[in-house]
Image 1 (cartoon, rainbow, N blue to C red):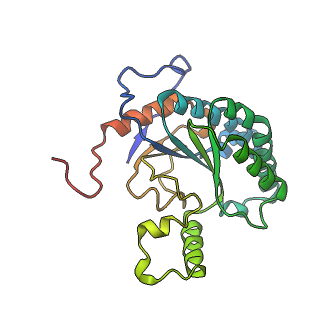
Image 2: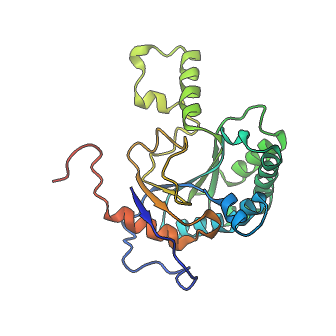
Length: 253
């Protein structure tokens, strides 16, 4: 793990560093978009305004991922633990994510981005949000570029528990249970393991995000608060990733 210092200024905003090897870009990048509330409070604003400001960061990161050829980008939008937040903040996040899907799905579709979702589809999620999720997924299902996955009402432990419950319901014999079989019961069985996990705001933890898929990911932590995150920060994280020696428990000779 490594901490990357926040960049200042915007002069490098759209520049791919010459040292970034486009032939060694992580296939799957996951982001914990942390720091929205603190960003707002530092400016004397409501926490919800920090979430709204994070939209620009998200779409700049998406465009950067497309630019350098990342195949999968997964973001932590709303966790199973986020229901503990103040009711007015939860209501805002539900409405904000619905609005984002309504207003930006077509834009992503035109970028050849495939939108997918992982998480629990239960009674806690408003039906109108589930409807927007289905519409965005259907609109972009045949796209062949970046797969952009939104983890919504998601928890890594919940995903594993739900997979085990489904296996039990299907009466899978114990001697048939292995990693490959379990993975078939995850929210998105096609999702590959994470290569690079980026967390903003200076926190050093996974927060129950993609616990299985992050088993051998390279982790980069930046002090940058999510609303200030731009593709240049993503490029910096990729540069750090390219310096790592990935051994997956073995030895590189």
